[in-house]
Length: 358
Image 1 (cartoon, helix red, strand yellow):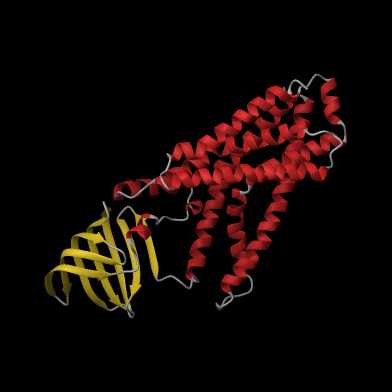
Image 2 (image 1 turned 90 degrees about the vertical axis):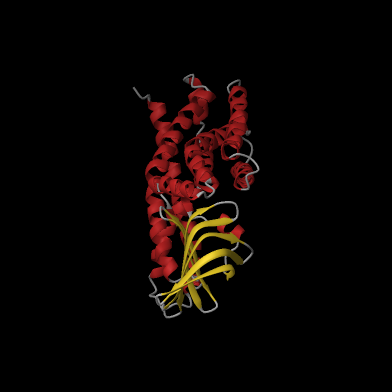
């Protein structure tokens, strides 16, 4: 049976979580509106579209800020407990500091699982719609690339021509089993090119042997230079906006990448980020609680908030730079995502032992 103080702490945490989330959402919404207005200023759209796009995009942006939200929510909770001297009451009923933190950590973990399983999938679907609408108004839509179960597809506009390129596989700076359909600006078919292999160079691709066909005329050419806007680096760094893909779409994309021979580093890292997210948010709650319990009561609330904010920013950049090492294949995806979390958890464990002695 849930005890009264457990229910009280849980509801108090949830209350501050909702309040802080609404504050963050408002800030995200305001900033995004200005960004969307700036993006659409040269397009013929109605006045409501920037607000609609912002509504679609803001939940996804908010998801990235939840570590800060959990951290600050815990701060506000402890400020209230300190102001009302409720921590002293908890001590009188033999509720230790570690027991208090365990209750909050369990609540935060349950909320985190809900956010990852339900909220993330909702926000990613909204983000997908957002990108689909926004791409229709994009000024720079000449160069598009996507990976599907049918291989790599590239739309490339160059020299007043439109090239639609499809390859079955990417391997060692080469495209394998390539078909290129060349069109004019009016989408009149100019050439159909079929090659078993294309060597990717810097904006110039080398086709050692290819079949050119047009108007029932077929010609085999060798050592053809093919001009394009894509080089090897651009192709290897190409990936979808992963925040717009739900779990099922992520898994499908990973399979498509593997079938194509394309690097799955970005997708794997995103998976591990989502898997670690509940633990990350729980650790942020514990870390914030430990800081608040170690602060002397004669310090001001501003001091509490500033110290907590600095710590949360430090943790954020630790995760960010660790992620960069993973993206550049300096370390494995697992280490880049989980190692900072493990280190912070060790600090929290030490903090829990010390805080319970007070």
